[in-house]
Every structure is written in structure tokens, then in C-alpha cells.
Length: 325
Image 1 (cartoon, one colour):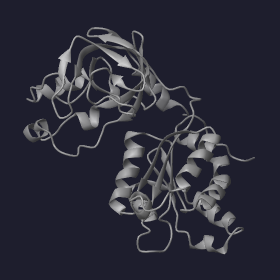
Image 2 (tube, rainbow, N blue to C red):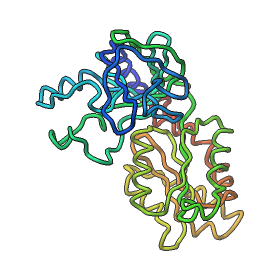
Image 3 (cartoon, one colour):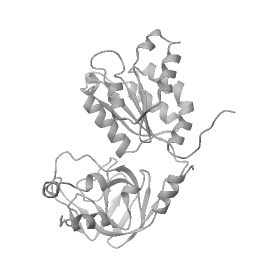
Image 4 (cartoon, rainbow, N blue to C red):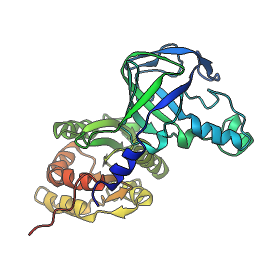
């Protein structure tokens, strides 16, 4: 039944109480608990070293997860995981990116679920695991104000008509090294925004297959974008790794999208048949490979963006299949 997943999530939509607020004045030092904190738009917590104008301004962790972890012998204190807010009664991990959290005048918007653990902390070395990479979430400050320990926090799920969220990733060894200026990424972002998408990230990375896979996994799993548009790495050179990396991290293929791009692009150039780009899904995120030139990016997006809106909303469970009569 359409909307079942949304209804299931709504059952979990309850409020919670702020158990602890934690900050650190210098990066690399453990966070310590404070009684209250001021939250600033496009920054995070005033005085916290990890605040800044990016999508991970405030980190949050469910107090219930910490309690469960401590029952297994972890014996960690507030702030040990590098979290800013510890909240009792809200299972952050069950909520989607885009969820709004309100506490007094402060409004936070969730931007990421979990994070990659680059170097294992002391907790991981002692316990063999750390809950922050899987259970922690991140948010940006939408409205500023002050939060005090003991304040209540409410949860507001993203509306069904919220803009679809997209990311653009350009695969290019030279552009990633600054040896040439990327033009296809900005063109893709411009077109997507013009069609009403919220473009949350635009990045340029190397053609290394492991690097590509990590980026696609991060954007699909942690950022939970609806659409990832890649540009570059779809040709026949030995460094064109985008299709293989895409298929390696995806669950299902959507071949008709890339077939349509190649078919329609043949009207512009017969070299379109040489493109090896694929289209596939990782969970609810659709990944579409496009060629590396701004001209080809525009032509390709003009071909596919019309029907994509319907397909992406089906993937999110917001609408039903629309069979032709």
C-alpha cells in the first residue's frame, strides 16, 4: 500500500528531552557537558570547534542508544562520541534526512545520517565498535536561539511535497587536481535547480574506482539524496571507471534511462553509442551516469528529467504506479 513507510515513520514521530549538551573549544579534544548553549544560523553551537558553515553543524545522538551501549560495558560519558546534543526519547536513526527538530526557538534540520569512521577512537578500540558512525545524525541550524538541558524537543517529518534532493559528482583526474576547470558540474547543478531540485552537494573527485564507490555510498546512505547525477568516466579509456563503480554499489538497474540518453543523443552525434553510462538504484537513491562535457550533460538532462520526477516519487513511496490505459 502506498505510503505505508511514511505511516510507519509517523508512529515513531515523538518528542524527547535534551539530556546533555556537549561542546569542545578545540578540535581534537573531547567534548564536555555544558548547561546551555546558543545556536547560530549557518554555524552551529557558538563556541564549539566543530561548528561552521557546512551541513554538519550540529551532531545529535539518542540517549537511549547510549544507555544500551553502556549496558554492554562501554561506560562512556556525555560527549565521548563527539556529539553535541544527547536527547532522550527520540530515535534519530529512524528519521529521514530533512526532518525538522524544534526546541524552544531553535530549529534544526537533519542533513546526514551517520558518518564514516576514518580512524578508530578509543571507544572502538576498547569495545570493538562505536555507535556514533551508525546511530549519530547531523543537522544545520535553521533558526537560532538557546537550548538548556531538560528542554523538550519535537519532531516534524519532511512534507510529502518537499523538493526532491540531488547531488552532482564529477569524475575527473585532472579537474580533481585543479589542472582544468570543471564546467559540467555547474551546468548540471544549474539545470537541476531550474527544475525545482534541491542540490545539496556538487563535488569533483578522481577517477579512482574505490573513491567513486565511497562517494556514491556516502551520498545515498548518509545524505539520503533522491538523485545522484554523475558526469565523466563513461567512455572507453582505462581510467573510465564510473559505470563499473556505480553497478558495484547498486541494488537494481534502471536501464531504460541510459538507453534513452544514448538513443536520443545519437541525433546529435553518432559517438553517443560509445558511452557506457548506466542508471541504477542504491536503496531509494537513483544514480545516473552522464558524459563529461557540459553540452552532453544539458542534452542528457533535457531528455530524462521530465519522467524522472514521477519515478523518484514512486521510489520514495509518495505516489503509485501510473499504467497507461
